[in-house]
Length: 118
Image 1 (cartoon, one colour):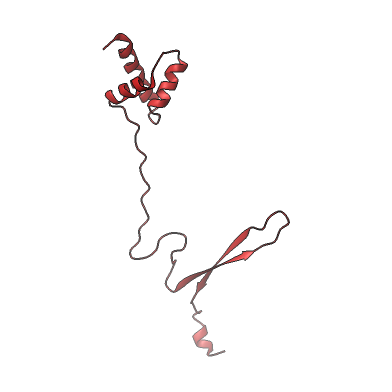
Image 2 (image 1 turned 120 degrees about the vertical axis):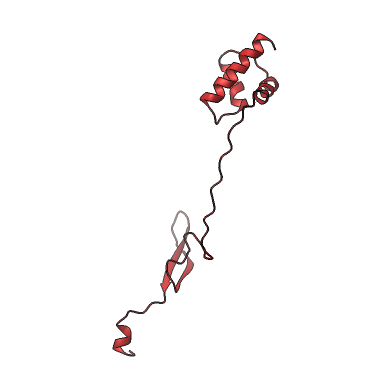
């Protein structure tokens, strides 16, 4: 291992510590900006030899419910249903579509039974 290669290894370790989300390509660009003569293949080989890696992003967990849908359209209480329709609007510049969402509750007030049939 030459002195030049050792210096590049030190630079790559420092770069990876300062910018953990950046990879070997940005490291090579930064080395060139600092006036170093580097080759992409060499930078990639040294990056791999040093065991440097960009941490992978964690995937978001899917929301799960107990046998029910979860999200914007999930039932908020028993006997709830959602209905949706598109309503065209007319404007001079463009005609966007509007989604109208209606929450329909099959609920009767407690006093409705006492009043009798209407």
